Amino acid sequence: MNEYKSRRDRLIAAMPKNSIAVLFGANGNIRNGDTEFPFRQNSDFLYLTGFDEPNAIAIIESGENSGFTIFCQEKDSNREQWEGKRMGPNNFKDIGALNGFSISSFNEEIDNFLLNKERVYCHKNSNCHSEKILNEKIIELKKASARTNNSVPEEMYSVESILHEMRLFKSDVEIKIIKDACKISASAHKRAMQRVSPEIYEYQLEAEYIHEFMINGSKTCAYPSIVGGGKNACILHYSENSEILKDGDLVLVDAGCEFKGYASDITRTFPVNGKFSKSQEAIYEIVLEANKECIKTVKIGSKPSDTEDRAISIITQGLIDLKLLSGDLNELIEKKLYCDFYMHRVGHWMGLDVHDVGSYGTKGIWREYEPGMITTIEPGIYIKEGLKGVPSEYLNIGIRIEDDVLVTNREPKILTSDVPKEIKEIEILMSA
Ligand code: GLY
Ligand code: MN
Ligand code: MN
View (cartoon, protein in one colour):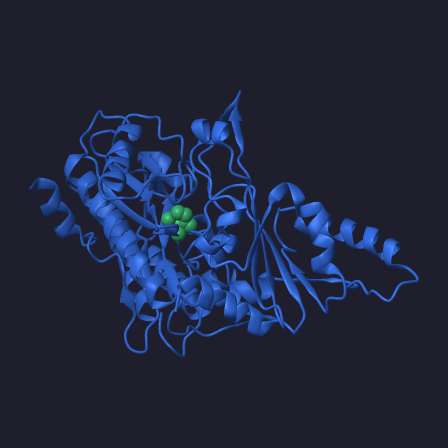
């Protein structure tokens, strides 16, 4: 069965009969003047419809009229001459819809969908204005239906609570696409390792990634690439990428492509001149051990909190061994003293969004990993200038090693293993 239809059917099955879910797609965004940012569809909308045009709304209905209606831009030869092809509402069957309307008629047509419905589902926890628009419509309808035999739903339900749980578990089709995305990103990291050299700009190294992404069929990055040489690697979301890479420094690159709507998310840290120094090596080995040990926890029966605990414990012990922290391991962990060096979480779900949707647990209890979930594993150590008690050879070293991992019925499946992370492997690749 069509992937999108099977997703819609699952949403329908999760709603009471005679209910609707109203999903607003994304609109274009002005960048400056009359230029727009490249269009990116809302991920939930894309997940359910595969329809990649701006200004569209999908209504998915359960019960007797079970199915899907699309509101979209009308065909317009003049606009299509400038902006590209539109499907048009009359071609609704192209995307498996039962019906199609012009987006300009939404305000009028929505009344028929809302009246006498059991429940209305929409986005409640996102920036989109759908809840406000629908609420206003409901208030209007209530007034109009007073003293008639029509009813209007009283409250909105969160479509996220159903959809985001679905999105957390990747289908075979999704896993295949994410594997392809990871392959492309891995090959970009390898290309960068082979091409980096002292005195090029960080953005010139970034260009190697963009080249490799696009040449392999990915039109965009899944998130702004971080290319931080030396001290810049200690800024977690550094993305200016505007400085010169220096001989003797490491460069941390967190870059992943988006492929067919799905993210990949890889970080590697490598020496600009191809050879790790002793102090860089010492920190790198701690992060690498944390990365490898954390990956082992991504399996049935264990929880994201187990992974986090593993990262914290290995990093803290490593810092004690190097005398960058002193004291008792458990006490340092309890007092969170490792946070001067490691201050972010060890992973996140990944899918259509790089930081993908799906809960990590509820009511203070972490959920367990289950097959089909994909998480990143990304421990790091960041030793910024000015950290007290740290010998100068360790200052301004920032290292993160990030892989994408699929939970399976057996061992964790690393989707990003094509790109080396052992020191020797990296040095060999860089000298080739
Ligand atoms: N690239 C974003 C992250 O690693 O979370
Ligand atoms: Mn990540
Ligand atoms: Mn990342």
